[in-house]
Structures are given as structure tokens and as C-alpha cells.
Length: 212
Image (tube, rainbow, N blue to C red; front, top):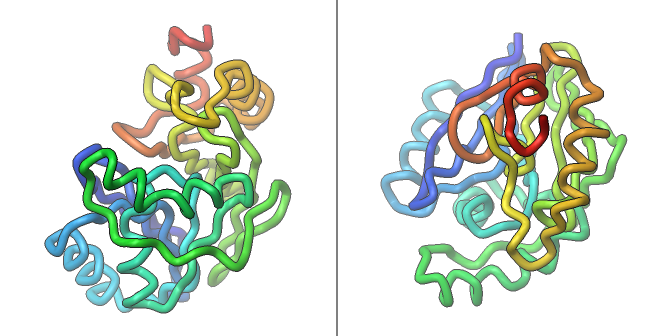
């Protein structure tokens, strides 16, 4: 049975996710850990559950979602996987961190890229990748059909949507990604996002002021 653990990390309270199933194989999505305390919390959880971390996956390349990349690489020898369109964000993240006064160790660069329609596999679990740009040029949503959930980063929030005023953001494209790609999955789909509480497609379809 697939399990999900979320952590709220960093100054932006970014949601970091660890997913694993009965095989104890696991993936981490969007490691936002940015302090010694947060690093240790993440490491202790993985150790206590005897998890075998297999992949480091990114919904997108903004600094609050990748600040733990270096720790994950140094600890588990995993390189980040991201859509190629967001690689420039990772390449520039040290400069962005310095300009923003945010803690962020230099991230290793990806060698594998995430593309729409491909399947991420670990243990007995599969997640389909859906290309949902707009918040960033390469935003990816992970869809687990068996358990009816998505992990969408900063594409869709409870009662809100991702920012589009950052470099590479596109409001019309984001709205299109949500309505054409995510809403088509069905109202029962649970939405795990990058900040704040989880929601559902049905709730956002009926109540989100940006989408009604």
C-alpha cells in the first residue's frame, strides 16, 4: 500500500513529500529542507522507516523546492530529475538564493529529465507525469491513478493557484494547464501541493476564485 509523508520545510513552509510502498522503496519529491535540523528530521524519518530512497523528483526548479537537493545527493547519491525547461532555474539557483537572502546549498544538476506521459516507477508503484507549465516553464505534476491523487507543486493550491509573476511564469498557460490537464482527471482526485493543505479537484472546480 502506498504511503505519503509530508514535511513543511524552509522559510516558505514548502511541502516536501516522501512516498513509499510495501517494498520499502521510496522517492522524495521537492526537498525543501534548508537547515541542519530539517536535514536531520528528513534523514531520521527515512532511516526509522528503513526506506530505500530510489529517486529525487522535482515538480519544478524554484529555490524553495530544491534547497535540499545537495543534502539528498550527498546523503543518498541521488541526482535530481526535472523537466528540461526548468534546468536553467537550477543552474541559477545559487545566485537567486544570494539575491533573496535564502539558505540554499549549490544543487547538483540533473542527468535524467521528466517528460509528459512517462511513468515513474518505484517498488510496486507507478506515477504518470503530466506537463503542467505556467507557474514555471517546466512544471510537472505526478499522477497516481491507483490511489487517485496528484502531487502538483505550485500549480494548484487550496483556493488559489501558483504565482505567474516570476521569470518564466505565464498566467494563461497556467490556467490552461489546470483546466485542460488537471480538471480532466476527475473531481475525486486529491491534490497534494507545494504549500498549504491538500485539496481536491472537485473542490477547486467549484470554489477556487481563479477557476470558477
